[in-house]
Image (cartoon, rainbow, N blue to C red; front, side, top):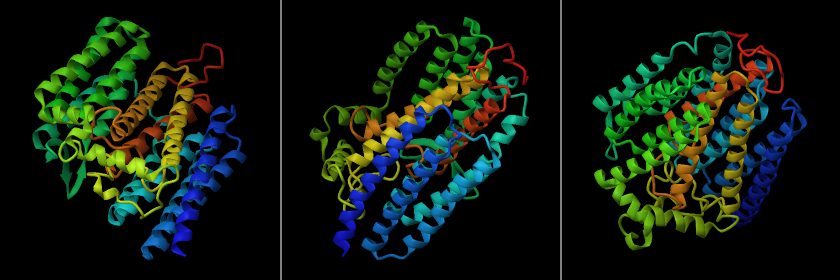
Length: 447
């Protein structure tokens, strides 16, 4: 009986994720996001996938704890999909649906790897949602976001500086500190402050002096992260800065300068940090160091290959052979299959496309830059995680948004999504972020 369940569920999950991915691209093409039929179908596909996930886990493991966790997860997803549109009538439903799909997938994968961690992640997600529900309301009420440019800068530098001085060392890097036994990774939250800082500084003035001042602040934050040896976050901050300056100025020279400067910084980091040298060597030829430096990468590649198209089935693989599998290598495809992995990437790309689509519709430059910046942070972090897992680029040690285990990452990603929702609601209601399709001279009415 167990063998039949494993076989049927893995083919069923693959079919459902293909249908869900197709529905995402239909949602991307729709001009009216308020149409409900497609989103009901998406929700049904999501809950069907969740059912097969947890049925498989329960029957194969024989542990009833998965049944109780399944109920809690489904209640959370159903409440999110129903309650949020009731509170905010003009919510962007495609982005909300995809967020729920990614959250549900992450909880399933983490519960397979570590049930205790999945419970902790669930609690963090629940708290994050409760806090996030206030973000669209605050976005519509607070009018001084554009005016506190240097507050964003000072708070961001101070938060990163505290970690540099008082932070706890994790795998050789100072990335977090604890309050009452709860660990926080401030760099995740400072990412949002960086986006708001750059948007506030560049929405109105994009002369050389203003760009130089933003470079000084962003460079200071990157330097603190480098001194903390949090090179993955430093790279994300740098890329966000370069592309937001380019989007604000439309000057390709800044993009070229960023490429040259980034290449120089990468070479310097390779010479200064031994762990960077180790990761580059493992990336160039992991098989030559399969027992040492290349162990993590080769195990990830073995896992992807052994899963084939449809996967081995949940609890049939050996993902724990990969170090830090629930954080850095959660994209392993061993048990869910390459088809599921490809579809997951396509859903993330579709979500990124919807973020960009929303951004180009906004006429208020400040809010447009915020949405663009969040989109850049989101897609580049995905690129770093998956690229490292498939050996496309050297490992950076960052998490996969909504999928990997990590409370700070999951919370900040949800905050970013709800900031986009708040801006989108303003757009729909004719606030400070108006549709680009509408012509007129009302760009700054909300101000």
